[in-house]
Image 1: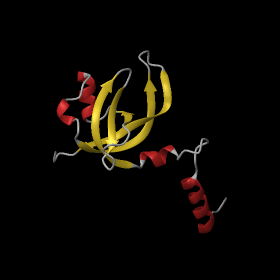
Image 2: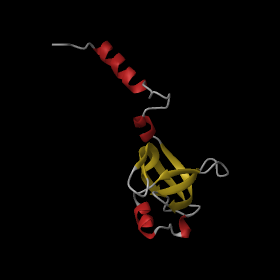
Image 3: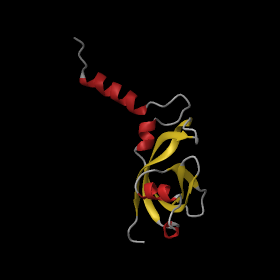
Image 4: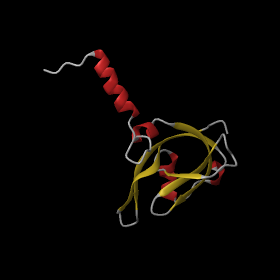
Length: 124
């Protein structure tokens, strides 16, 4: 029977928590734990549906895009459009990594930014 002493267990936990993927990027679990307040810019569908947004803290910054199929994005996917009143609204998102597919169902990317939680600010 192998026994771990508290110090050894703490060291193993620290190593597991601080590891990076081969390309130096943070582990997928670290990305999934990040939430961000954003301003919704738009929504577009092609092979996948994407929510376009900017960080609320940088309203003139670069627009980011992530696959979005949850919450209201599911309804928008059905309509292939976002109601225009959502443009400019603030929301809180949580990002993870997901698969990006082409129209034939082939995986184009295994680690594409994907919104895993979307809460639109009801006060706006």
